[in-house]
Image (cartoon, rainbow, N blue to C red; front, side):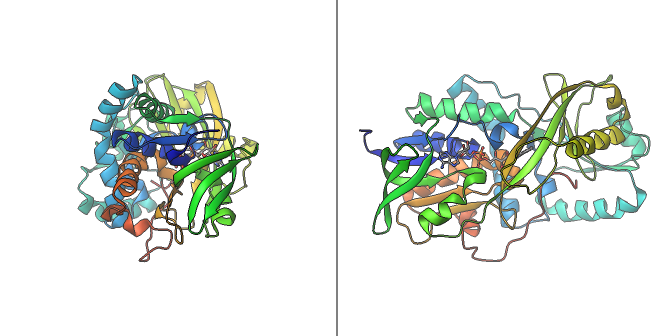
Length: 382
Ligand SMILES: Cc1cc2nc3c(=O)[nH]c(=O)nc-3n(C[C@H](O)[C@H](O)[C@H](O)COP(=O)(O)OP(=O)(O)OC[C@H]3O[C@@H](n4cnc5c(N)ncnc54)[C@H](O)[C@@H]3O)c2cc1C
């Protein structure tokens, strides 16, 4: 029989592993359970962009959350590399949001104005100035916004580092174990039941099940409106001369990586749990990339893959206690920005579990939203 565990986290993606790491730092016993390998789902499919502007309409609770997470990364990366022994290829490459159609210049200027109060450095560039910074940009790029502080990281290494650091501090990681049921006493979950009928006792449950989170609706009798959103993405060999900045076009993004590739992402499709690549998706990525950086036409395709984002109706995460339950906490629905939000999610959810009080930053993201929130969907339209 497995012994009673403190906190049981169902989902070993970047969100579950970050919470596990932060809980272990606070000395809380924790077990992470995943139906597959740790970090093998959305968290390893991500492009690893840490570029908050595109997801934000302006100041507000989501900006506070995202920018708080963004600000933690430089120190967190150092801390996690030391705690895990894993290098994460974190780089402040800067990002260019570029416009090819002059009719869209006012839109980008409008967004720049809305982003100004957020405090990130931004520079408006002419097409010529943008090409000085990034010489391979297409000749029809007529304006660009440069955000020098925006960064990127290798997403698969972030989740591995959180998991390894948590394990080094004593967390238990269980793979290939699917949770299909619960045992309860009144308003407390007392144990989880696996697909093989095994019972795993639990004092506190954290639902960090990514795109699969809606399965908890029936088990917990709450409405957890999280759906899978497919993202197709691919990696091309760097052109010569190589790309140095993250480029956001009006519909897709390109990110130069330390392994000599340029990652081109990503589609946004609601096709259930289908993770296959399609001719249409790949063709769209390739043609968009070629239009932004014509020299990519000669590049070889190194890799193509797809992942399932945990999407909520308002594209915002669900963070906080599960209504009607004494010992269930929700940490899901991170949509397109889960890697970026992993730092603050781990920190704040651990604080909630340790103290019983939800930190101010996450209160607007309760399952039942206390106020109307709006966010712009991340990455893709600048
Ligand atoms: C193509 C693409 C590009 C992206 N790019 C970026 C980016 O540049 N920047 C960014 O910040 N974000 C990006 N994202 C989004 C990011 O990947 C997600 O928001 C994040 O990975 C979600 O993490 P998670 O831990 O909630 O989910 P996941 O990583 O999917 O983990 C959930 C885990 O729960 C497990 N699970 C589910 N149900 C059960 C069960 N019943 N029993 C046991 N285990 C279970 C699953 O096996 C899975 O491993 C991208 C996503 C995609 C698809």
